[in-house]
Length: 149
Length: 417
Image (cartoon, rainbow over all chains, first blue to last red; front, side, top):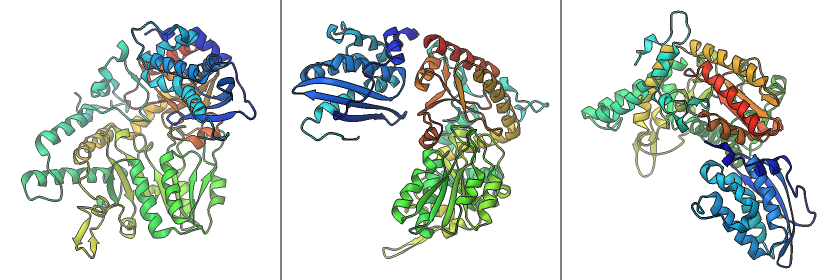
């Protein structure tokens, strides 16, 4: 099998040098975990009105989970809540194979590199961990900050 | 199919061709590749003899045990108790009354935690575990501590992955009610000095439970010589079917512990007001057990006995030594667990590559290893890594398997340059 389908160059690049790595003091803070493997992500999201004005992460995980988080932050920064939801749906369909056969949604941009994950069912959770943390962060509108999961 | 007496050559070395021919699954071709199964520490593969015993049971011997007077009930009862005798012989227990069947090691430990806790543990008492325990030898004690108010103390682990015996000794005191430690570490492969561990505890009158899940498949066991009070292990890691575990308890421990679960087969007489319990082992085997798997488990024990644990453990050491040297020589590899006395487990990390990515790339080449925290998160924390890659060896592995592991790891390096 072609491993390149999973470990695309852009994924390896984000694994080596994750973008938006760090913390945002005072931001909404969510921790995501994969209890099966012990991987974790710590996500800080700053929402200004309806817009994700800043987003950073740290954590421990495999290349897929780290690159996914890194590329997610790039894709989400500056987007509205509604746009973020749409990107989440598109990405989720892509990695779970629901978008199979269809032309990958162009709006996903470089996230389309994760299409190969659909052929590795055991790795889907790695790709979606950061995204579920993001969803939780955005769902907590109106609640106070610093919730640990 | 080889008869099991032929499995070791006169030289004492394993006859690998004959052994491998006994394991049908070794013939499958995952993703078109030869199967290189290096995850026996998670669960072992099963020889034809065990699969046949399971089939024979359901085709010719199935009945409920200790209940009917008909032919099949009687036969199933005999077969079930034959396995109990085989287990007794395998671990050199004094009596079959010291052997209780459970679902697995985890249930065996939960049984002791629950019953021992109820009878003997009160607030402020202490239970000693270690930082190298599998979660199944930590969490049951925490649950029990939650009910009783007891405190869990943990023996530290040295940099090479051994128990710190001096620290162990100093943790013991008049409040210590039980010591619960693993015989062989599932994540590191370290073989702990169990006889010494038991001696130290017994000198203070403290009973010892050993988690033998990774010991029973690989080492000759003599519970009387080791002297432990309890020994827990699983059938599925030693060529047997899933769903069978063993709890050994020395002497009269089973008489002194209250029942774990109530139900059929564990009673003497039942009235609505009060029940008197059967004697061990029945007292701890409420309800219809996994009869078929227990019966087939005997074939697994006999396979190991005929091959001999001595020959198996020698073979694993040869593979482990070669793998340790060759994997250890690869760029960016850190071996986790380098104790001189080890069973066939090689745990490692690779700079810049997460263990999951290692396992996925190896899997594409037919090589099955485990990646993750191995249900030993306190140990991972101790070694400053969230996860490791783990290759584990058993009697059916070959040098060709070690080659495939090394070549696979070189491929990992290529992908992650």
